[in-house]
Length: 580
Image (cartoon, rainbow, N blue to C red; front, side, top):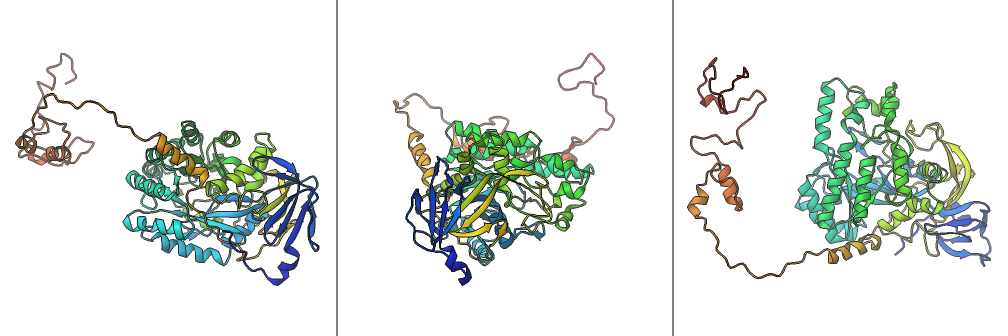
């Protein structure tokens, strides 16, 4: 059921209800064709040539231009509390900037701390967003902790609150990170609900150790952020997340794919038939990690995000996989902090708030790097910036498509126009832009949101609070048709055989209870195994005693030492050399 349009101020209503886009080339994910598009009351009402339209309709000449669905940014963090501060682009400034760049819907993350139940977090985010958003929006739910109470609220979020995607973290140890057994339970729970699990894939334990090591060496600048997170930590976690999801046969969506190894892990899994989706972002497609070594601390810190940007060859590699279908759609991970906020980590890179811009520039950056470079055609561009997201999150064809009955979120796109990205001219509130100075071919001339022109002639006419919450129903056919088929085709099959009727040795109960580990270290009985680990009278429990690099043990005080004693018979026998 379509979400009703919010009531617009009276001065915006009369001339905005009926619009005819005439003479353009419609671009959908599957084909391009010449057609006029008639819009009325927020929806596409007619599509074709020689349309009969009512009087009083405003006609916009789209001759020589492309008419395509508005962009869907699958990954934003507006006004996110992080690192002791709050992202500077809130739901008003962030969605206003999105519209300026051709994105007509964002999907933001509800991401609260441990101890806050999901429903309470959802209500908090809805209160923050509802009065500010300028475009339509949906929510993903971040699961920053896991227990039975959290688990009990997931069905309510799915069935009553319009959320079909839940994000887990393998990084941010002691903050957001879940253990593998918790992630497995999340996967099983979400599959039972027809939901999608998203994952931030980095090995949090390794990152934690690396950060300690680098700080001890005196490396405190933004370059340490990259050094602590080498490509292997993202690649390993991505592979592990895919493996966990595959065991449960739950669909997996890998957010912000930032490196070649992670992208390859997604590609290989898809070749095996796994239902996994990879999301590169504008940052990983448009810039790289060489900026972390810039001599200007502010410039380097302005690029700090997690996972970090990688080497200069990575953007093209990811673009190639995105163009040929190995990676599915694109977001931005837009989470912005000004210079004085980033400066919280001026003496310790682990305290730099993580996040970069992108919500305004994604559409132009991907056109420049993807279409203008010849790596993808306009249809693929529409797929990766809009349609695939709509399909995965089950809002297609309402969103992501130019068709009769679809929401009138429409762009008139000029593929030959250019613009140069700069913090001095962008609409975001943040004082820095990671794409500074990039010239992009491909510019939205007209942006229509909910059937209303919000960008024209370079002038932005966004209205605070008119954005609608778009529910994302569970059991997306694009995702779950394959899941359900795989459940049948991969169901374990019992092997029918004759029962074994030969002899079986007997293990006496007293032997199992009194078993010495040295006598029988392996047993199929878990109770007996744990019995064997307990320290026996007069012996050392090797599983519980302490250990130090010096070789001393926690119970060494029980052993009489003879200092300076020459060892004449070392273990293994006397050596004829001077080793002893």
